[in-house]
Image (cartoon, rainbow, N blue to C red; front, side):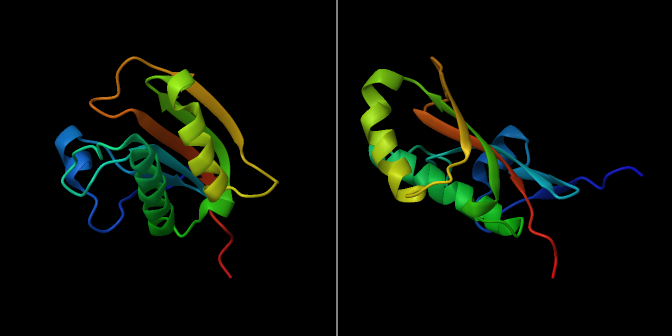
Length: 133
């Protein structure tokens, strides 16, 4: 039986998706594959303060997850991309501690990159949608 892949978009977050032609997430069966979320404002521009950019990326992630009827608790896999991992690590860990304050933590892969289209942090996840009641 083929899976019914459904695009997912949060309300009021379409600037980058439309500009670059991609979906915020794809729901395939009970899995949700969230595209990389950055600390963009509604118009698609980067938040200039790095720590606030990371926090906004998580807020944007939460909005996409909510649009797919998920939450941070449903995350299975996390991949983050960093333009200067060594210098940014402390700020990222501080924001992360507020998002995931206690175990069990999702598995996490961090990758250093040299370009994120004007951003300095990006997060993509795979989540499992809760079973419908």
